[in-house]
Length: 63
Image (cartoon, rainbow, N blue to C red; front, top):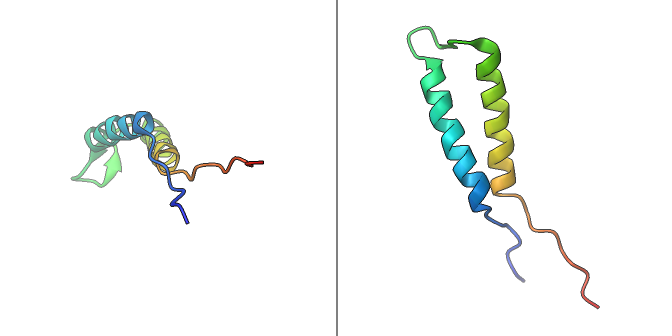
C-alpha cells in the first residue's frame, strides 16, 4: 500500500518564514509576545501552514 502523506514545498517555505517571525516576536525574558494579537495571528498561521505541509493526499477514484 502506498504512503498517502504528501509534502507541499510551498507551505513548508511559508511555515519556515512564519517560524522565524514567531521567534523574533516572542520575548523570552517575560515569555510573552511583544504584540499579543499579532503573535497569536502568526501562531495560528504557522499551525495551519504546518498542517497543510503534511496533509494527506486525496484519493482519486480510478475506474
